[in-house]
Amino acid sequence: MKKSLKQTIAIGGIVVIAAFLIIPRTGLFSGKKGPDAGPGGMGRALPVSAIVVKPGTMENALKAAGTLVASEEVNISTEIAGVVRKIEFDEGSRVKKGDLLVVIDDSELQAQREKAIHQKKLIEQTLERQRVLLEKEAISREAFDKVQTDLLVIDSEINLLNIRIQKTQIRAPFDGIIGFRNVSPGAYIQPGLAVARLVKTSPLLLQFSVPERYQSSKLVGSEVIFNVAGYSDNFRAKVYAVEPSIDERTRSLTLRAEYPNSDYRLLPGMFADLKIIIGREDNVVQVPSEAIIPQMDGEQVYVYRNGVAELIRVRSGNRTERYVAIQEGVAVGDTVITSGVLQLRSGMPVEISLREN
Image 1 (spheres, rainbow, N blue to C red):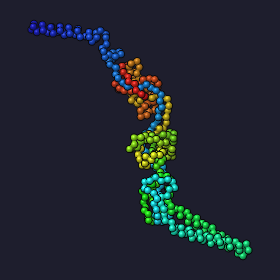
Image 2: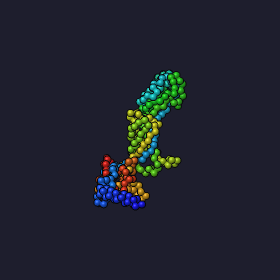
Image 3: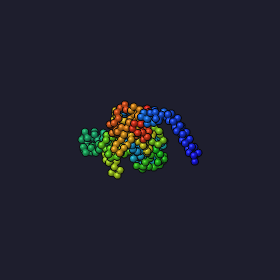
Image 4: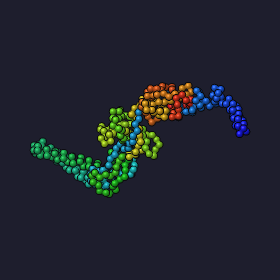
């Protein structure tokens, strides 16, 4: 037993000696900080990203979805019955206003017109003879007036035939793209039958809806940025009209914006994801949305000051996808921390890496 006691005492002495050798190196009792200690002895500085607050432009934007529609669209049809003599267009081709599209046989109308012109000449000759007789008082005034009336009637018939002959040539009412044809040469068509469809695709109209609460906003003239499937581009349009009533079913307001589509890349019927810029505000103090820390009683951000993160309460304003406007708490020139904010505590040392705001 005495031997065991001696062994215990010997081991204890070794532990004490070792402790005295090690402790001075750590500085635990010397008041010195270890190599990883930061300001206040709180440990290694946490690396974070930050931005220097600058005044910027804040866009008040609203996301929506819409559909591209043709600015003009019409079924090309005939106003008179007849046999199709010629098809003057290629399916899917672009045509100009006034271009000849379809020719209907007008031979019968031309014959009627020639007959009417011949009758007019006979009536004019008769009228000249009647005028001579009237001057000699050889005929009554009533007889002369009847021939004059016959001349007016035949003139009207000729004018009507000219109009009908013009209608045998169906022309494009506006610039556009002509679709598939529904008739062939030699077919007999009736008035109103759709020969083909003509669509105007430059410009295109973007139709979409916004919640009714935006009806008091200045919407006409607002810029719309949209994209469609198959293209990585952002396209820009401008609102030119607002429907004068609210849709009772969806409680929304319908808008139309115009997109030039001068290169004819986009087509009617395409679905579009969009955002409408309702307004812009300049010289706004704004920070990235990831810098905002929501709390039950408000919002906070971490500001870098004197090597540490300082928690600041802020009052926010408008928001976009990336930024939040700050009305109180942060000023231009402040350095706001944008990463690692959930790991920070006020007064914690940080090592910042500045990025562009």
